[in-house]
Length: 72
Image (cartoon, rainbow, N blue to C red; front, side):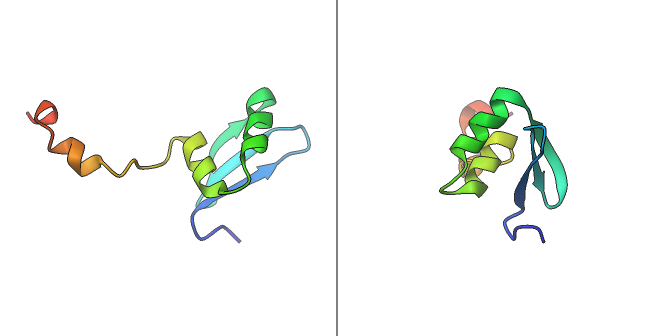
């Protein structure tokens, strides 16, 4: 069953790690990147997986949209 937050990961026998988001593959990590990810995941795996896939929000989208530099 998928995690209610959306992210899950599976470690494969070949050492690669597949990160899924809502049961769909988001990214596959191999070699050193997979080892680095597995060492980092622990306290809050949802946040770590969101960062590694690039699928996260910063919370400042509305502020940035209204900034004079971003208006056209």
